[in-house]
Image (cartoon, rainbow, N blue to C red; front, side):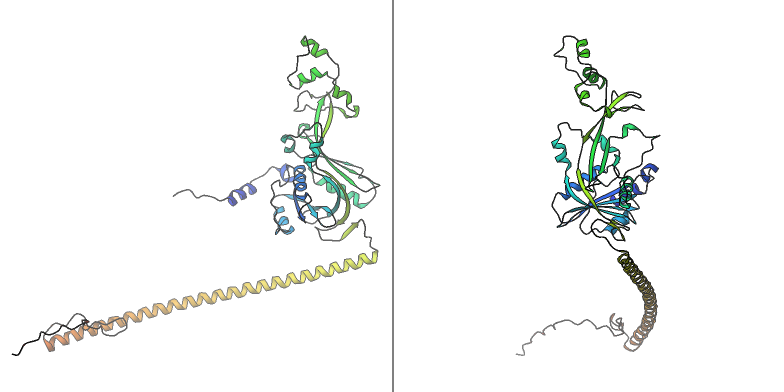
Length: 419
């Protein structure tokens, strides 16, 4: 026998069901989709935000218009997805919804301004974009989120839980190549979202020595001797422009050249984009549908909150009642289906029994008719004294005698001349 070819679905299911590392399972994963009106660079912004959340996000996620939130929630458990980011565009503007799967809460932000990653990178004089930086999750940095108010605590916990936690005792500094910075302005209530690439450069070296340490090929055309190249300039020009606050002592060796343990290095940030400026508008208890815990523009009294709570409970009871009725109807249909199946099986059994009985009766009739034919043939021999024709006493299946062969035309008799 030949080998049976397995389809794509079988291969994918094998990959999903295979054992995964515990660190990978525990890490927060995310879905990032867009909804609402088309245009306004919402597709490009969604792709840029997926780039920020790599590697624990569905980078090539293909979301169709007919896909609902329930579709994503149903597959979230298998794929270890914990968060969902939804960019929506309406006539009033663009919004970002951050949801915790599967039971919420949901945070709704209004995007006042944004800049795509391609536009950010094109404006920079020095660019630092490399694929190795996106193999590990970024470092999250929150600024000014420690004020009063429930909404600030919810925002801080939501942003922190979207990225994997870092264990300071076991972390490898070489894996931290990017960072996401979020700054909250208490006066304007706006949040600035920035995405940077991190580069660590050794300090305290001349430009020539730094090039040699970093394995760069030096240009010796302007020097008469190699010693002149090393002694020319004690400090690099770029280091003179650095802020001393950016200088740190490394606790471990990095994978980049020139950065050794207990050595001094400068941390430089290169913006990758996108840029977002947004404001928190609403905090909901459930997943896109629940009690409103905070709203920026609408404030309810205690009585109004109680009324809304009662309505929600009534809707919940009606929904449960409908679900119970649907389940009962489903059970009734299944019982009826089973009864019809049993009836059909009984009818089929009865039909087979009737067919067997008819075959037996036909066999008996055939045997009786065969005996009658033998008797008739014997009687013909005794009376006439000749053998009967073959088709004379044979019968059809219906019990009628077979017709003897008759020619379609009669031969004409020859005319005899009497004269």
